[in-house]
Structure formats: C-alpha cells, structure tokens
Image (cartoon, rainbow, N blue to C red):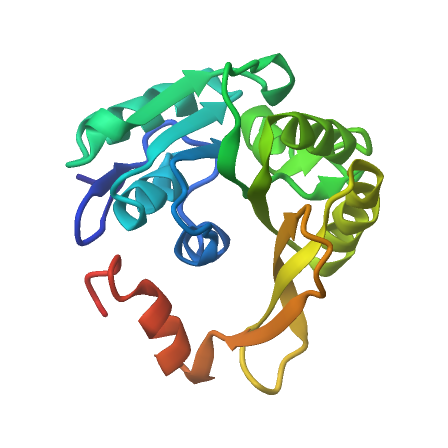
Amino acid sequence: MKNAFRFKQFEIDQTGCAMRINTDGVLLGAVAGKNEAANILDIGTGTGVIALMLAQRFPNALVDAVEIDEQAALTATKNALNAPFSGRLKVLHSAIEDYLPEKYYDLIVSNPPYFVNDLKNPEHRKGVARHTDAHFFEQLLERVAAMLSRNGRFWFILPLKQAQNIVDMAKLYGLGMAVVLHIHSDENKPEIRQIVCLDYSGQPAHHHNLYIYAGKGLYTDAYKVLLKDFFLAF
C-alpha cells in the first residue's frame, strides 16, 4: 500500500492525513510513560501512530485519541481497528476544547502544532496540523489540567521556544517539569526538540540528551534501543 507504514505489531495507513509519520511523533510514542497507566489520552492523534505505540507499550491500558480533522480521524479509526489491540483503542473526531471525558487520565500525550503566528501553510489542512495561534497552548494546558489525575503525567514534544512557552504557562496550573529529553541530530548539532514531561509532584526535573545520528545515515544505539520494538529495520 502506497501510503502504508509498517511497524512490527501494526500498520499505519496515512491516506488523507495532512501530517504524516515523522521522527517527533515516534519519539514521543516511545518515550512518554507513567507507571501502571490505566487510562491514556493522545491529543491531536493524526494517523493514530502515537496512540497505537502507547497501546502496544501499555498492554493493560485503555487509550483514547482525539483529532480535530475529520479525514485524519477516520484514518486513525481505521488504523486502530486493524491493530491487534483494537479493543483498547478509541478515536474521537473532536477539538480538545469540546472533549469532556467522564474520567481522569494517568497519561496524556500530544505532538501539537507549533508554528505560532507564523505564515500559514497555503494547504489549509496541513496548516491546521502544523500551525496554531497564541491561545492554542493556553487552551491545551487548561484542558490537560482538567483531565489529568493528580498523579498523572503530561508529555509533549516541541521546538525549544514553544516548549518553554508551555512550561512557563503550566506553572499557572500547578504543573512543573519532571523530565526533559533534549533531542539533537548528532553530538555536533544544537538541540532541535524537547520532549517534556509535566506533573504535579514539584520534584526537580531530570534532564537527558538523545542524539539521533552517530554518523551520516547511521543511527545511534540509544535511538535504536528506543524504537527497536516498533521499527522493522531495528
């Protein structure tokens, strides 16, 4: 299938999805965690890849995923139904501000849009997937704070500036950094992304570095270890 991406335990059809599978998403799906998570939420699921990775990693968890784009939500639903853990996955076509669950989540993840107030992409649906405005992160945090259990964790991946904006705003909701993964292309390149975990614990944050490449076309052992349960090549 032209638009299919095969993982070890499931397959992702990317048909009709403005944002396709990328390094940001798979890294978040491999890293985000919470001990004994029973209820997990993926905000802005796109193809559903992060939700599926979390369903694989947490075999006892129920995973909900919300997606504002109707076509992407339909594709993610199809991908979830075709997965071996389909009975624990549910995809909903909804904006996060309209999503009102009757439970709290132990683990919430998001790979959100990040071009705040930049020139919008001329292809509208891709613009929705990648661009946002200054109020989006505030709305996101408001909903996360309302849905996250007191012992829960919220993980996201963003470029440095946008990640810091969320960390600063999160303080208003009593959320602080618990883990920060600083992502570099290689040891000689500056940091390009941060995976941040927020929680209510108030404990000092643990900082780690991840280098994707060891050389031209060669992945680091750390990157391969993270994704070995998912990628056929590893």
